[in-house]
Length: 192
Image (tube, one colour):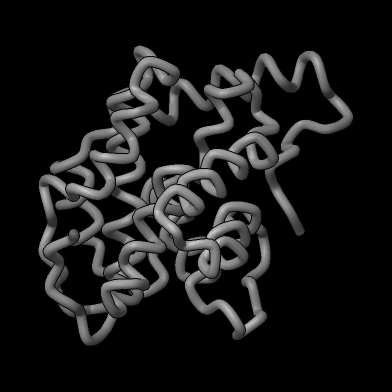
């Protein structure tokens, strides 16, 4: 499903995959819902997945979990047209896992989605991919300010291969609109 060569450490080179079939299969279904922001989100998902795999290449099941969480982690932005997108991102992920007969993955993928904007590290060792996913998303969200040991050159190479395509600008516009309407809850997706 995914043809990444496993990395043995954060500093090991992880091949940059131009196409991840599982990602394309799942995300293409949402192309109409996402609309003109599709390429920006698609590239964000590719960047997050590559950064996660640079942190922990893992086995095939772990890579698939990262891909699935990657596709669905922000999808609620477009489903409900909201900055409070974590809750509406969960049902599609759960439905997808049911359709693939992977209900045992639900708890972990749900945590990967709900905790990906947690400020502090996720410390429960039951599901180590939750922290890997949080870090991978933060590398991209921070535009490489946070690296977690991923080489700067690799972050740049992934960014060149999968350009921003207005993703962060789009998020910024949504955040401003949200803040004007909800000044007492400016960042509903962030957890302490």
